Length: 137
Image 1 (cartoon, rainbow, N blue to C red):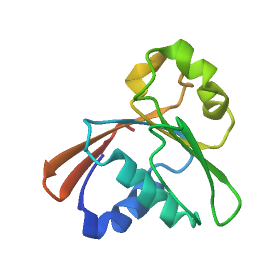
Image 2 (cartoon, helix red, strand yellow):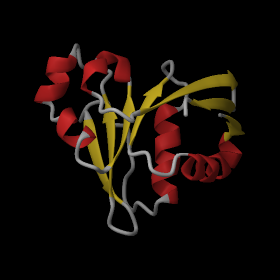
Image 3 (tube, rainbow, N blue to C red):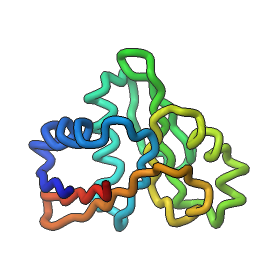
Image 4 (tube, rainbow, N blue to C red):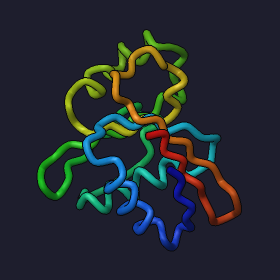
């Protein structure tokens, strides 16, 4: 499944994404630097009613958000990690197997720690303000 959207219609893309991925909990987000991975997760969190600061976890590695209905969303960024061992030490595996929703940027840094049923998504910039989201269902 592919979604093409601009920043102006990202919330519509999020609604389509949420409907198409019902039942999935772990999302591995693949894409180049600046492709829009963090922006998309931010929009998903907003649609879920997350209050407060939604930011990139590049330095914290893991950000935890609470949705309007009390569910947890983990936003994980493995960019600064070297390997799976560092991901394990950072507590990433605990999040992935928690049963909560997890969005993981740069999953190729620790491919062996992901649970079965992880949904892999490719995000790419196809124009200055336009992104393509390819969901590998």
